[in-house]
Image 1 (cartoon, rainbow, N blue to C red):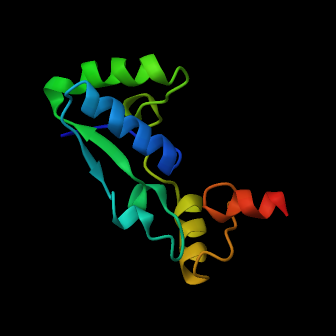
Image 2: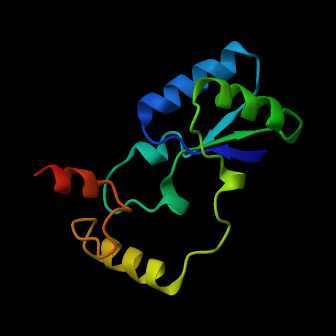
Image 3: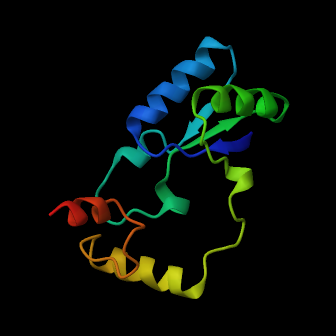
Length: 117
């Protein structure tokens, strides 16, 4: 299985699943149930929901998603740099404070709700 796409929210995930099912593309969603547990810190490389497809279906699945989501960013097109020391430190602080404080700002689920207040 090859990582294909990380949806930005549950609605997008449901939409992607239905489109892939309709076109007969086999897929698997890594962390499909575990990623729904929003207790504590959100770390994308740990609990992000990731759509995965078999290697032979990768290009077809990519084209299908591009046909319905014009600005889709695929896992292979994102930077493949491992997390830096500052990222690891920020995640450690976030975990120790149970996700209530994140020194990095925009990388956890609470950042949008804090901006709205």
